[in-house]
Length: 149
Length: 83
Image (cartoon, each protein chain N blue to C red):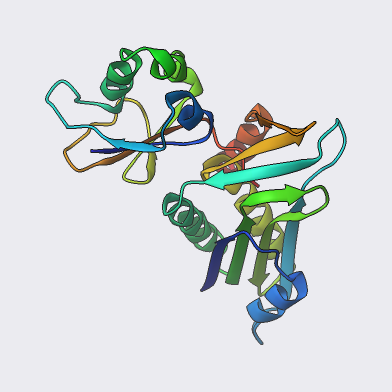
């Protein structure tokens, strides 16, 4: 499997990433892009991570997806760190597969696990101050349902 | 052992990492958390409620009952909020 994991401050080009992931055997690519959401007085976001463990965890999650959906040919996961403005891209998960079902399912699986396992932490910026984003129980529930299926 | 702190745990203890000697009384990650909390100040604040903390040993998620050994990398942090 073609696995690309990048943790970076810079933005990424979605079209370039999908083109790089696609092979002749791929009949489908599903992708998810997470953005910095505005509203509630939020003016930006600052992300930090645990270098080394982040890459390990994401690679582990991708290997689990590959074991579940053997039709997967490639996975690209890019997660940004540092300060981001509203509307900026935070994360890209793209899955190339033989058929759409496994591409859709693996993409969702990867995001659900990334949310609960990959060591990133977000701070929201309001009025020039920063506050830590609380972990959401609904994210745990989303990851948990994959254990049952 | 190399002990690392992330997010608000780092802010409360006032440092990102430190070396802690492994002793027989530090059998588990929970023992280490209890020892750190007993230092008082920001440490007591950071480790006041262990249910709010997560721990990794050698860059893998573990529970507070995970056993420690000399040379381990132990990290304490809040539940993750990426994606």
